[in-house]
Length: 115
Image (cartoon, rainbow, N blue to C red; front, side, top):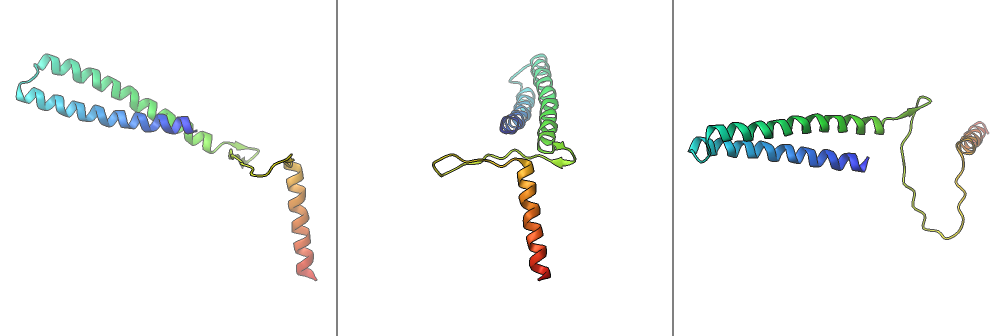
């Protein structure tokens, strides 16, 4: 996802650069610094690049959105980086063990409420 975000940012930045370059070309054409033929060639090239970039950025945004909202068995999955600051072996519980522990906590809360 980090790579997709970077690609989106770079693509959007390049699109803005192309807009600025086209504006400068237009001004140069009006001032007579470049010929009409050269202006048409350059703007056509820039517009084609911008069109392709815009499509790519939209695809990357969809990919990013899909990656963030992947659903498995009706539940959203989120990738999480876990950093440990302890030394030693750490046993990470399985999904079944986590569910069992949560049920145990819920049962003990219900018992505490009823007593």
